[in-house]
Length: 367
Image 1 (spheres, rainbow, N blue to C red):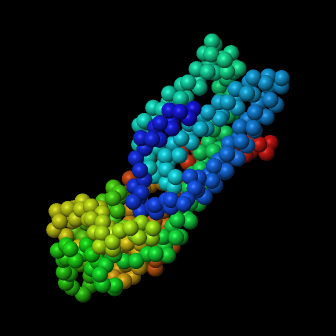
Image 2: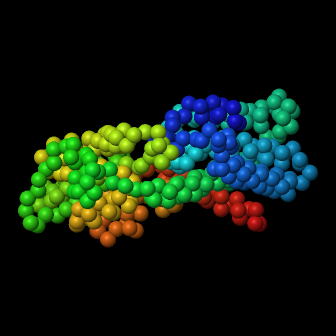
């Protein structure tokens, strides 16, 4: 159950923020602190889940040791295959990187699961592994336990991300030459538009590389058509490099990198506004996204923040960090939240299903 998925992990793309992650110290052990925590927690969860299946199977089929062994074996293999998807990133949720974005992993898990089915159901293979055929009821019984360790790993990632966000928040700085200036590095590099009038509505639109930002801009464009007395500010926030990375790179190189990445994110939005002849100012800053958005809205005396967010259920938002929710908590400026694109059905229902499976497993254990 581990061989093919392990090879697929070797073909996994790096995290999108890999260049912002600190380099490993040459003195750091192969198994660092976070990895040790993960191994310990996942190992205990796996052990509890598999032993629970084995024990409950013996209660269901007294005297049928092979049935209990088969169910424990299948639980171990299947949970490992599901957890292979979550192991694709040490800190990012499997739903944020895309469950099926690594097609090699999909094929590897599919082939591995087929091998497990062969071991259980092909007659001439069963004697070699001491397995017996399982019924549909047996699979339904094991289903909640399949998700025990993958769910535990996702919850660990939530903890690691929150801890990392707190560390980043202490080093948030604007990516601008003049503190308090309305124009940041990108604004100085671009042709800024001057706004005239005394009754301007100042609107701030946070911009990243997602499709949802374009939804927010389209909404503001429609508003502008009805009220041209509007001052539009685009803001892209770059996450800072850790101090470990910054120690190897010059300040100018870091600024140039963040400016280039910000311009890449702003490019399609600039094109949209230019097509309609709508004036705007563009800003690129660096730091914690929610905090920078809040501070910039206050510094520019904005009347409104317009943000678009993917349509997710509450359980998905619990597992995945939401910049929109953080901004709503921090700012006193009115925020208009626009519903963006819906997430995939797997992402929408995957987390609730996993939580329900874990709850069902807990109820079975308590029972």
